[in-house]
Length: 280
Image 1 (cartoon, one colour):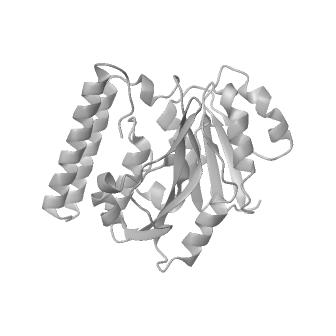
Image 2 (tube, rainbow, N blue to C red; image 1 turned 90 degrees about the vertical axis):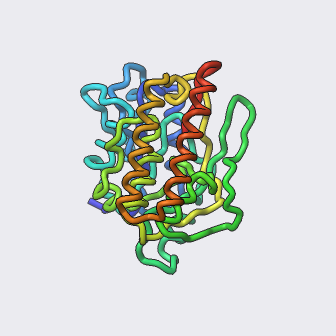
Image 3 (cartoon, rainbow, N blue to C red; image 1 turned 180 degrees about the vertical axis):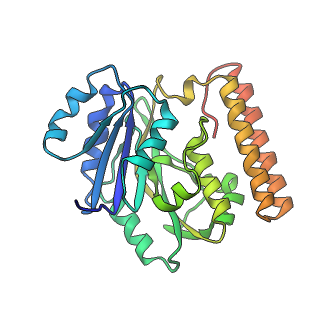
């Protein structure tokens, strides 16, 4: 069987209204050595029937869990058990790609990078809320920037550069350092930041290329989270602060980082008094 360079993971649960758009956008990627895996977390809708033509044609690998594992556990199982690709990117089923050359551009940047030790390539996305679409507000303005894991971690809040659907990461290193082992709201951000701490001298590539659309709607997990889930998120991010100190990162910059985490959490708690929102 062909060993793919890249896997697009599409975890889904009861998202029949979105799944075809997501799958079609993944299959439209023009990178030749590509695998698309749909991980169905025991959906009760007609997801499986909708995907049957793609399954029959051998265009996707489809797994339906026998029980509902939950969002992060489904991410975890798909990454660890259902692909052996060298590089992995996660596309939630209610999101989709708009740039068919995104994976090709990402892989070219990784292969042409001055460093052989690349943790991930990360572009941006559009946030779509109804008819309105706006780009993520990264402060990275150059087309492509390379920095170390420690620099990505310490500058996370100032760069404002994160996109789950646009992060193509090294699967071997991700597994080695426990990607998706924390069942929290921001399991994606936590996993990337934890990887950057553990592999602090390895490099990351940040691009201002738009990969696709993160669709905001009433069913988003982050929009339906309560204060307990946000507090669990906050505790996990505080543990990253402790990990960074243990790794020998600059104490003052780590302290500032922790203050930024606290500020973000408190802002979220205040907003929860009026409406549910996403904690980054």
